[in-house]
Each structure stands twice: as structure tokens, then as C-alpha cells.
Image (cartoon, rainbow, N blue to C red; front, side):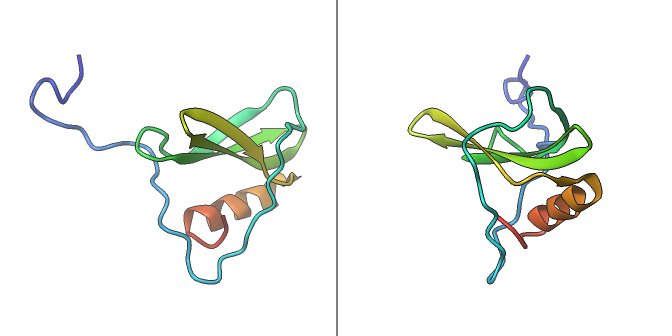
Length: 100
């Protein structure tokens, strides 16, 4: 049963991104997936946002997957892929508003 129905609301446990900071770095986004199987290791809230992001790993590389709701249709895009350490640095920059 939904917590709201019971008269109380639980806070969302997922990460909510802050607005992008002035002068933030723009990531390049691509429409096709580079890997067939991926492991999602971190994510942002998808229930309260038009766009949500996932940090994915596959084949020893990390990348960010962005899903945007456009007119009721989900559009998925992918960042460049980096070595895992660099990918986690880029994820940290994303959640701090330094890249989008």
C-alpha cells in the first residue's frame, strides 16, 4: 500500500541532482548503446524528474546513461565511455552540477 494513502509520506530515497552550475561542462550524448549488457552502479531519482541518469559499467569502462521523458516518450542517450575511475569522477561532477 502506498505510504501517501496511509496519511504519511516517505522522503524519496534516490539522489536528486542540483541545478547545473554556471559554466558547467556539457557532455556529448549519443543515441546508440555501445554495450549490450551493462551494470548500473548508481542512479538519480526517476520518479520526480523529467530526466534521470545512471552510472553504468561494462567491459571495464564506465559511462552515464541519460533518460529523458519527451512528450510521454522515453529518450535514452549515452555519454562517452571512460576507464571506471574517470567514469566515477564524471558521475561525481554530474551530481555536483559541474557537468550535464
